[in-house]
Image (cartoon, rainbow, N blue to C red; front, side, top):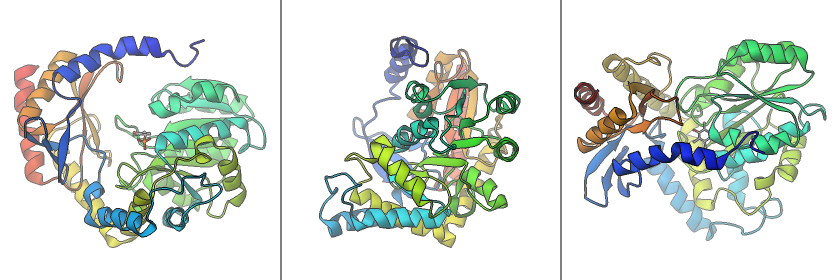
Length: 406
Ligand SMILES: *Cc1c(COP(=O)(O)O)cnc(C)c1O
């Protein structure tokens, strides 16, 4: 028992975090959307800018995507086929998967969320169905996302599981030397910042046949040609995705639509597609991206194919640069939009976040157990649709209030 999970213990550890953050008014905010990451609280009418939104390109409120969602559901006259997608699916589901496969040059399957994509794909990899029928040693990066870690008990019933330190290439290579089949489970871009060493991992793949599993929830749209993310951008140098690599992503974040996706391998990998659809749990049931979400996926894919994508990425890069000049952090200059501002003490961090919100900026305080004790701070995400005035004012407030509270 409790080899991988202990919810009662986690609940005890995280209790203070939830309590303190809720009391500070940083949780449970019910708000109306005003566009461009701005909100108005329904409780007191307070308006604020979200400095911790995943919508890196601002696509969540893109008029074309919102319109396409409405049009799709009205055109179909229903949100769902209300039967397994394996049996009957609407044309818009086929079209959305074709569009994603085309856009990223992969074999894409859509699913209700990135978490459901992890649920569907990790046990399949552990089973050995993608590694010559031999269950691989499943190696998790210590910082891999919660939704990947949560699959460990399930994965452990199919294959041996181990966890290594964050981005520890030496430990991983040692395991590759001593085991015939190894699969490495990592985030492409980590939710608290930083990326996987993709080029080095691909070298290990080349040398040992390492199977690579990446969660690109934060990489897709944000980075790379057509928004293909850090992994596919690197893999493009060697001809694109290969059959020793599987990528999952969210379509709820940078992509600005809904749901998640699994990139199974090269476009046209029909056998792998059949294997995944017939054996991958959540893919078979009644959950899928609903018709409105699929309309949004189609519209977002079209934006990703257009010159607008590059413009949005460039605007995001400018905003990240501006922020880095005003607020230097350990991650400055890494080409990604996620920043962690170290504060240290938990109570000072919450008071700082509370002060920022009063002045019109929502910034997520994170602390133990999300990160180590005494290392609390703010997790910030830059967006293409922030004005430089907003970033400048926020940075000024951050310095002023930090001096006051820390
Ligand atoms: C948000 C997130 C997920 C979950 O995505 P959903 O689409 O909300 O299920 C998975 N992985 C990472 C790294 C994330 O940040």
